[in-house]
Amino acid sequence: MEDKDFFKRLSKKEYDALGKELLKDYRKTRNIHSRFLLGICYSEQYKRKDDAIIIFKELMNTDSKHPNMYLFVAKHTQSNIESSKIIKEGLKFFPDNTRLKNQLLFYIDNREKEIYFEQLKKVATILVLLVVIFTNV
Image (cartoon, one colour):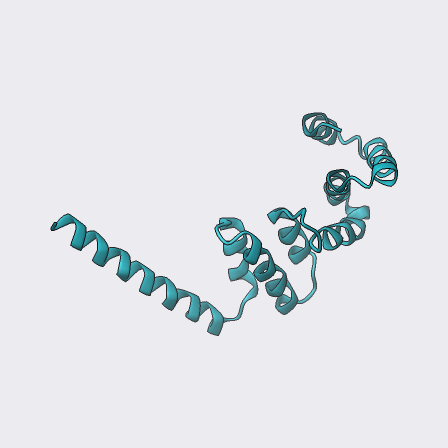
């Protein structure tokens, strides 16, 4: 299924038909992308949230990863410790993803936040020094 068609039908809330079609396609072809789209379809439905979590956790153990999988699973995990582990795992694969970085701040304790802020201060200091050096050259 084309992504454009999928998202158009998803926006129309054709969840049941879409879910059946994607599940049938996945069972027939074992296409990982169909599985990912099925997870998205389930994630839009409160009653299928747990199914979406199962799919996304499975996909997180494949080469087909997406930052939104980590965000969704972390959001629907009961423990902040477990949620922070999930987000940190996502950051290993998507180190520049701003949404993952921002979400991590919700799950880590104050001690860890202080460590991250100290690291940011060091980086900011280095950047300021580099600007000064290169503007005086």
